Length: 274
Image 1 (cartoon, one colour):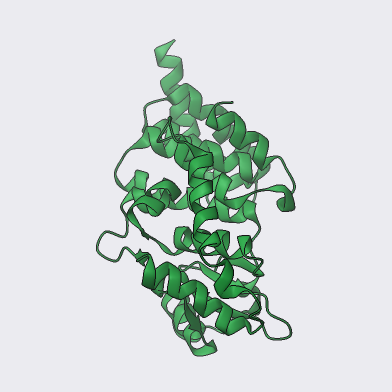
Image 2 (cartoon, one colour; image 1 turned 30 degrees about the vertical axis):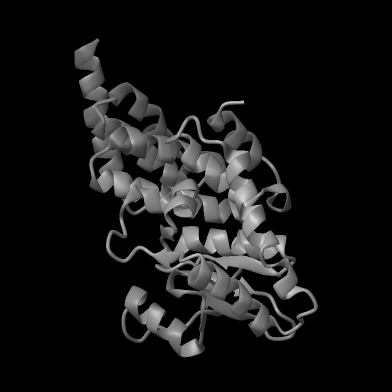
């Protein structure tokens, strides 16, 4: 099965049935067509096996998290890529495992993938601007920053992150710490890549990201974005149905008039080409 077909099948499953590390590797597989996904999953298995004895019998959640963080970031040397944050390779899980550098979301995926193999109750949290990991300890869950060596995060850390994202006077909404589903994590990963490719004006790759986002979420804004990307790539005919559907499905959207005017210009271009 080719990567896009497998990705489509996987994203059609319920959240509990989706292997997050497989989904992330399938995102990478469109860029690396010969990618051996089982081999990279085995590498995650090996990392977890190396920790089996160290976590056996340990019950304290903070100590368990420390063992995992120490191994990944201390012993193996995984780290946040602060020098070249927007390198696309930071978003491909195979590259993160090979190079041991990444961004918050991919390092969190590694952290969760290894931790869950060890039976730790970990999940991702799609906090605005900085993806993090939740350790669902009872009765006191806590949060970890995989981009910064698995550092535990305090309420003041979250308030600072919220301030950076939303500006002064922002209250910390508890909903921002909601656990993310596998589908939400994959959608965010693809949006990161889409943004990078748009910035580089690499529209074919941005289109492929947008197509896959629509396999994960049916948000009307994603349909609009795909239409606009086709237009920027000079694929005017391909752009029309996406923009037409967006206008139909989002009649009250703030940008409705702007997109409608853009659609009319594109339709005129197509008529001149006929």
